[in-house]
Image 1 (cartoon, chains in turn blue, red):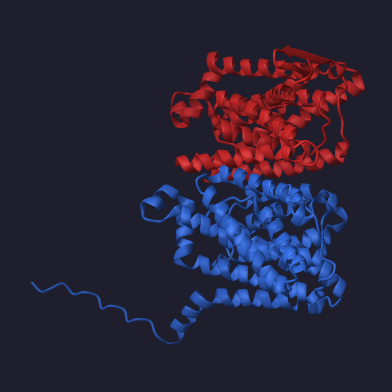
Image 2 (cartoon, each protein chain N blue to C red):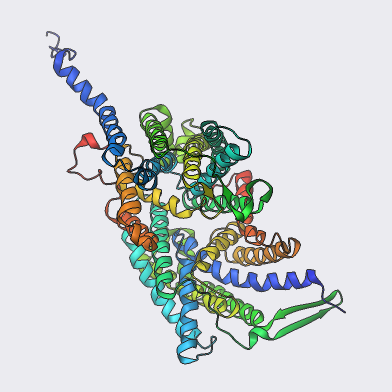
Length: 331
Length: 296
């Protein structure tokens, strides 16, 4: 009896088709992201009015950066954060204090804000990692409210409820816009790289089943702290831009829970833990909130609530999560 | 003998704390029975307050009598909320996170609707009890309290006691405790989960309504009240333990006393620190949990 004849192994794919497959597998995502950001970079050319640029268009990349920041912790490692408004406020105050009180230049003040919010995020993430799901959400909410109270009462540094004026630092509208866009691009790059790396796998493992992840040797608390810290590092300079764009901050305007809820809305609609969906949702809803509804902004809470409600019930996996949508967009 | 400010703060804190107890009990009941954190609870309470207010304004109804209307109305609203916010996602993965998002969306909607319907104006149901002081004489000095706080504390105590007896001696109450211990086993023993959940949500609404009547008598209330009470209730629940009746009582009274002591110590310039007691309570309780290594 002769040995069984094995089928010949198919040759390793080479040539043009393989290159195309590889390109499709690897690069269409990056290409798509670059195209999206190029379009966003061209937006000021379409609306050359500096007033529109500073008061309306600026908010599109600004929300985008915040949404992607929330996506790092809320999407990948599953930490529902209601504390990002606190990080935003800390970023705004840190930038303003270093730029005005200590006379640093704008970029280094915002870098300082990134460092402060990174460390604060690490702290909140680490202490909060003992709690899961909704209890973490409550803890972050309380932490942010406490931070707001401290800022309100620490009058020697923050001037308390009088507010903190930043009149002498004038950034041009295009500086603001491209600064926010750069932050949005950095945040998106972070989300993209996390989604393709071991860290991202660890984040998702912790999200899906923390006990199992721990049992397989993943240091869950460390990864949760890291996710929140990275997320916080984006919120700092984003808050700084808010401060420099509005020239004046006080404990109620810089600490605004509504921003937190709006970015949750964007990530939930776009799909938690996705890269492209939240960008699209952020652009659309930034436009909705800052352009389409400026005359209805007394209904901002109502609209935010209804959209979150509808999105959670109807599109639990995000706008690109439907079956008919091309796979190429689902990342 | 004159007033002893420490005793005044202590008694006042216990009075407010009893309100926190009955308010937080409603939230903690839902956490215990169905693991739902209901962010709309503060606005359910305000619904009770506004109902009391308008019954008084339109029909001159005594706020204590309006309990007879508020309790069934809030029960119905609670059941309705269950079918809107919890029932549709009951079988979803990440059930707790999903209901958290849904109830938070509900909070936003209710807040906006309340502000549009009833404006930001501060309201109160004026009663003769409000201006009647009650003085306790002790060997260490006198303590004073408004009569309305005493009535509120009595209502809260009665509601808490009734809930305790209900959970202990009725079939439904025992089914709730069974579900909070082990839902799967409870269902296997024939407890109808949907009906039980709906009833729990209704009872949670009734407790919110009772708290709302007390609020309408004791405080100037306005839509944002719902949110600040929510944070206080979280403080109570985090201190007292999730799903624990006795813990909620202890936590609520502790928070009330902590707040009034903070207000007494930082009198004047630091008056705003009193609100911080709840946040600190949440975070300290959390830090203790983290040290003990408990994740829930």
